Image (cartoon, rainbow over all chains, first blue to last red; front, side):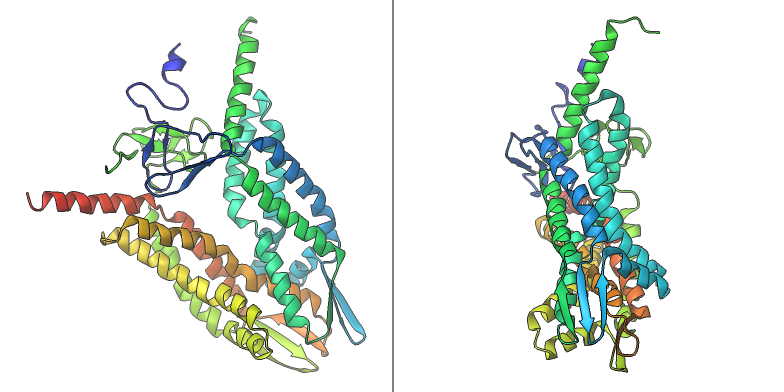
Length: 227
Length: 214
């Protein structure tokens, strides 16, 4: 019964606080927003919790779709450029490869990371989190996956890359004929999925599901002799 | 109502999962929920933010002076700096795209560096800037940073797309490396800055003002 007093939310009778704003440290007595609403910090206005209904299900769908879209987006050409007898395609990887070939290793690494690795990593981590949070045994890997997701969050720049494609498209129209290839549609759809996961994903839903999975596991094993 | 802060009530917030945990006796506590290291405020926040901001400011000079790419067209071509690339777009009549590129690669890095320096000074000298105002700066700096990479993505696309030797070719130039580093360094700087320090310094000013006349 000691666990109940020192509850995981940190709230006791003497300390009614359940959350502190991560941007201004104001203490709040409620931790979560009701379904379909946002909890804003009354002092600084930071969005503390956005309760998206069925967050885990939607995020799982979006991230899985994103993963599927990654295959054509990464392998099919995005743009095609033709100039008299010459022509060339642009895929996600060959821009990185030619920068690497010219010796701009740091630049190539950065472009690869922001346009391929980070978005892919985010989709993979989210798929793992959404699938794994129902299993009490996976509590620890899911927790670290969540932490990695937080680190990667800002570095997935599919939207910026899409705008870069647009600028390149306009810049090259005078030089030769440039055309949009099917890969670009997959890429745009993948970008939309990345944005959709950012909106639908609610870490608090994952934490509460993990807590209940853990609770079931503890309740299930408590009846058996501890070996 | 000034509002009770976590620091006053001996509770810390995990910045990774926003879990509220009792203050530990020594600074890096482990978050019991997600396992991240928890500090009451981001460790050495001002020092890192200053260092990275100054690095960014210094690197902004080569980023703008050195050419970022060369467009060779029918054997002739000259290196382009960021500004001259924008001018070319403008002269070609694409002023919409010119504005987008100008904002993303000239205005945004400058605004970020000025904003970060202003935030650091606010905390360091306890300037009487309303925290709501400072928070607006902080959020703008945080939100806009990634869009500066636009120019680099464009270069990487063009380098792959236009490889026709003497006829037409786009090459990256050293300025782009400096520019990429500016963007990365300022993105890390805005992550290092702890906005809670703004509120701490403001309440310190308020406390001083309350003591003063008494």
